[in-house]
Length: 79
Figure 1 (tube, helix red, strand yellow):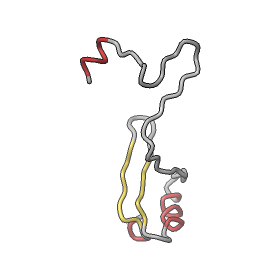
Figure 2 (tube, helix red, strand yellow):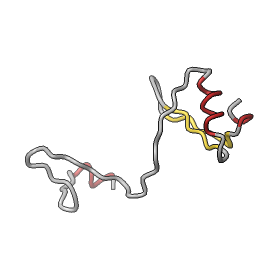
Figure 3 (cartoon, helix red, strand yellow):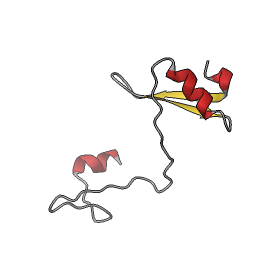
Figure 4 (tube, rainbow, N blue to C red):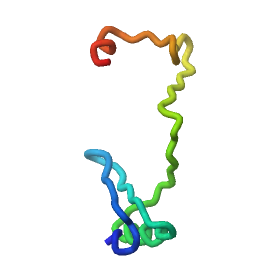
């Protein structure tokens, strides 16, 4: 039904007790798609793409984050 109002495709993500449905929409059709999927209990969540990659932040005392991070032997075997 979402495709009939302007969604070009979609993807279901997550597993088990939750997740998201992501829709790719034609320009100007977002509101119509949100309305249609909202009839089935979906709640829209705004998001943006981040092209900077993964960033790890840890402010705990003694934490090592960045190039100096040491990997355990288990981590090395999986790389």
